[in-house]
Image 1 (cartoon, helix red, strand yellow):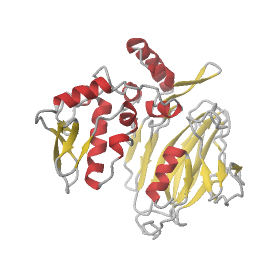
Image 2 (cartoon, rainbow, N blue to C red):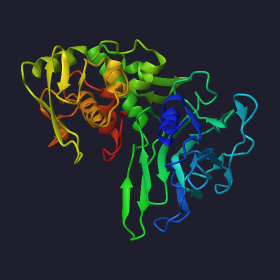
Image 3 (tube, rainbow, N blue to C red):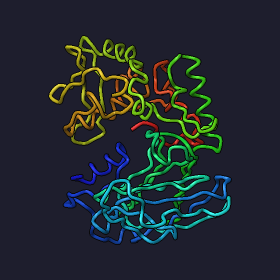
Length: 375
């Protein structure tokens, strides 16, 4: 891995976390903006007395070396590079959460690309490859030792300037996770996450959507012994079965291409001072932003992943356009709004018959609607 961004992308896509080799831009200088460690109070609301938390990431004050917290919730463990792949960890990194309702406090160092993992009724298995490279649990690998376990995670970066933290439903939904942050001024910000019945609600919704449109939404439900384990995002579902949803978005894409043909403009606000608003129109079957670049018609997999086909193009201005264009496809708002993503009306998201119903169900089920469900 060359850069930090590339290392974090590999962690998301391949479930492998490794120290970047290009440390020129790494934030290794301590400042007074944040403390050197962060205390996190983890409350066990799972109802299980066998719940565990794990923390891993890249140590910001140690050249972004791969680390995990040990079972005491504060000792930083740096796994050595093993001689063979899939080597067990040399330390116990399962932090027990105690009885339901109890609080366990963990201490986290400055971290890039961090994750806080939770498991219920079983411990998780993290392995190490030469590098060292940490092999993370995967929701799409049926041979993964964690595949049939209830687990989930939230993401964070805690550097010398700020703390960034979020719940994520990009890959799948399983355990409900909520976050609460109290800053140094005493202000409390809360992201409530899913209710305790969230997974069941989303799975029931996926089943109902398949009954309504005949599409394989219910195939995204993963069960073990008849019980729901997780609901995969369409992107994760396609990673397991590449023909899943093949052609699903094509009728909608055709309508979008027709709408913005013959000189009709689609305006994308890049939300940057440098590029501002850019106008595109379909010419020679490509959505062309004059002086910037063009997009061929995206496939369904391109839309769900936001990183393949025409959405894999590089260049700073295109990279400002792509996520906003892809989001409009995911939300199916391109036929009703020619300026994206300004002045959006959230109630119009996901109202077209062809849309990301997984994302629709996630947002409808989240207690406060806050979370993100596509990459």
